[in-house]
Image (cartoon, rainbow, N blue to C red; front, side, top):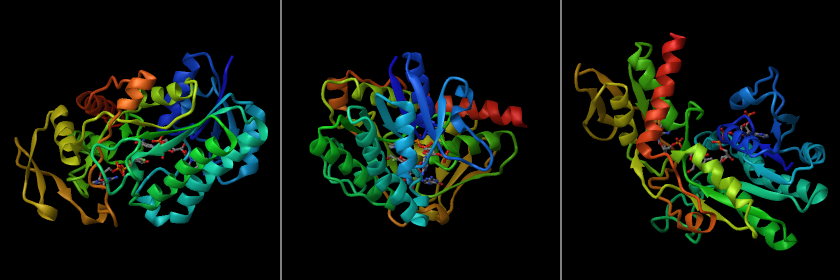
Length: 338
Ligand code: NAP
Ligand code: G4F
């Protein structure tokens, strides 16, 4: 039986990856932070199937302990302060968790079980002010947030340990991936949650920042499969994982309202732009500059050719299916809460 350690087990990707590895017969260990009230987050339904180990990416002792306890053959480092907006408010914590934390886990592996295979959760945020479109493995990086800068350190230290110590260490440069389990502050889930609440009369309108931003959005279930595939190869390498399609935030909003039976149209420009319900004429979407970022990533569009050719990876969930799944789940949840 193969053994895997997943950091960030309570997050969106951690829970989907744990399900995949359990299905494949792995013994799964999950690293989680101690909280004043125990909360397994997205992994709550797996509480009897996973061995949980307390630890923190900023505490190398806890990571050495997690490696000793798990004796993992594969380590998936998904733990991070993952919200770009917060990285301007907590730049140091973000650097310590998302940057130095990667060196900590690599050192823990090197100390306890150097032959373990390692996956690092790198990100398309590292492309930031994009230098080439579509973005691929060879595109130069230009991060635009403290999060992107910290992740770039994590990316390079992973490559450096591969080259310095011959460790099997891979980075997946994953573009945005969402799901019914996405945190409520990320734009897709903020939209589907708000649309459901508006539908059931619990909220008047949705306030957003930059609706012109373009993202390459896929479903998390597809993306965790790519992580696993990377660690099943003969040699370690880095891969872009993306859909090859890009959409504006505004398109996500329109589709989410449509699937909830409330067609909207956008009128006005800039901070005056509004989304109006075609049937009732009510304003359902407004711009609030409070959600603008100090520096924005305007466009992300990934080229997944290498992952498709070398890993045999393909995404299964389309953009439309992603929005539909998320809106359906939030409509069900909000209706039962109501
Ligand atoms: P997520 O839902 O925010 O999950 C992140 C997890 O990291 C949470 O379980 C969190 O635990 C844990 N964590 C945070 N700080 C920690 C610390 N100091 N020590 C230990 N654990 C800590 O993120 P996700 O969407 O699943 O993303 C997984 C990884 O992929 C992240 O590294 C993210 O940066 C990266 N990534 C995500 C995307 C995307 O579009 N989703 C794209 C590219 C890369 P708590 O529950 O205790 O907060
Ligand atoms: O959903 P977001 O917060 O995701 P962002 O910044 O692209 O980061 C996500 O994807 C990265 C991969 O590229 C991951 F590494 C990272 O961990 C995270 O998962 O914002 C998407 C876009 C941005 O351009 C933002 O300015 O939506 C725009 N936006 C417009 N209004 C908003 C809002 N974002 C949020 N969160 N909230 C708004 O009201």
